[in-house]
Structure formats: structure tokens, C-alpha cells
Length: 115
Image (cartoon, rainbow, N blue to C red; front, side, top):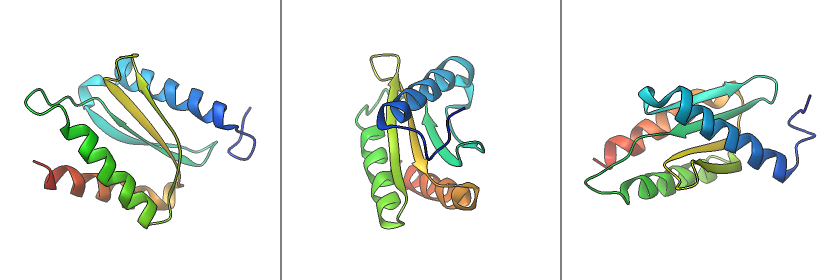
């Protein structure tokens, strides 16, 4: 079994792709969320929520969220979309359960400010 210490960049990308696929196929109704993977000690943000009226909104939100991660010293390990058109994304962060509330608060704040 892989651990956070043994994962390669390609491994993280495959993991992110699997998370995006799972979010799209199995958790679409929730639109977005944060998962904690105890065995890897990482958090994953997924987003299934489209904006038909302003499609660039998700990219803007993601850019602001990434800026908050950098400012807080949280490293992005991988990012992937699913299906190939990029409808759903998953962003894997080098952050454990102790940072989960920060991540949830940051994405909630970003989303509320971009409406």
C-alpha cells in the first residue's frame, strides 16, 4: 500500500484522477466537499458544481482558493479533472485532519465572496 512518503508525482496525479472520478460518479449530488484520507494523511477538495451563467467562476474560485493554500503553507500535491472535459475536479493537499477546518472555512469563504 502506498503512503504519502512513497507516492510519486505521477502517483498523486493518478490518485487525484481517481478522486475526481469518484466525486463525479458517486457523489455528484453533493456538488462539492472535502475528504480526508487517513492512510495518506491528505485532504482532497472536490467540486462538481457547474455555473451555467458564468462558466469562468469555478476557475476564479479555484485560483483564489489556491492562493489561500499557499499563504497558509499548504502544498498542493495534485490536481485532476474527470471526465476528460474537466467537469469535476479534485485537488489533493498535503494537509492532515488538523487542517480540515481551515480548508473547509477557506473554500466556504471563497464561494460566498464570488456569488
